[in-house]
Structures are given as C-alpha cells and as structure tokens.
Image (cartoon, rainbow, N blue to C red):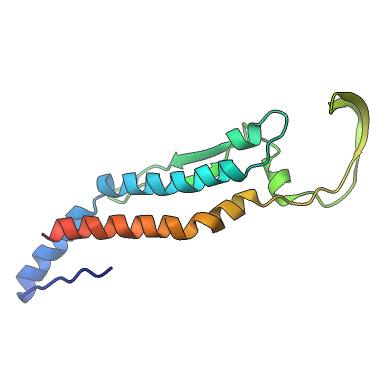
Amino acid sequence: MDTAIHVEGVEDLATAIDRMIEGVKPSKIEPVLDKAAGIVASEARKRAPVGPSGNLKKSVRKKKLVRSWETSAAYIVALDRRKAPHAWLVTHGTSGVRQVEPPHYANLGGRRVLITQTGVMPPNRFFDDAIDAKQGQVLTTIEKAVEKLVEEAIR
C-alpha cells in the first residue's frame, strides 16, 4: 500500500483511525472475500478430474462462514463430501491393495467386471494446485480492495 496519512495531534489521529475502521467494516470486506474465494473455486473446478458422474467437479463449494461479533465472515473453498465422498481418496491417493469382501460386479467402460481387490492410486493434487496457482491473484485482489476502502475512508 502506498497510501500516506498525515495527522496532527492525538485527536486527529483518533479520528483518522475511526474513519479507517468504519471504511473496512465487515459489510464492505465480505464482498471482496467472496470474490477472492470465487477465484480459487473456479480454478479448482477447472482442474478437477471428471469421472463418469462429474460429481468431483460439482463438489467444489465456496462457503461463507458465520460472522462473529464485528469481524468479517471468512469464506472458504472446499470439496463437499456429501456430493463426492471419494474426494479424499482422489486428492490424497490410496496406499495399498485391499481385498473386497464380498467381491462384486461393476460396469467399467461399458463392460461388466468382477472387483476382488482395490489397487494403489496416486494422489491427484488438483485442489492444492488450484490454490497455488491463484494465491497471488487472490492476495492482490484483497490488497487492492482494502487499499481502496482505506483511501475512501480517510478522504
């Protein structure tokens, strides 16, 4: 931030601080956080592997948490485990072979196959990659918005 504030005396300082606090109220910050979370959510959807149901891509959610007192509500981006209960297995992978008891049939690629054991699946870090790819953009978005709110407040 390159904003300069000139104050003379304690009274002027207190007034300037009060105006800055008023300028960054939760109601003004939350839309910025919503936009920032949307950036990560959209990138995670782009990077999500698409299976037969597409549920993993559909499970990416942006959620506003509950606001407490006078603080801004946080926004999170997460995978909805109700929509895609397999999300953890995809993002973290599986480590070993496990016998399926009792064996059952499944349709894979239009063919009926007997499943007797599971195999090792490497992790697909699409969610982490989305965060890494958009972290700079998110921080810049929030920084510019807060700087603008502070500048407007101290005018």
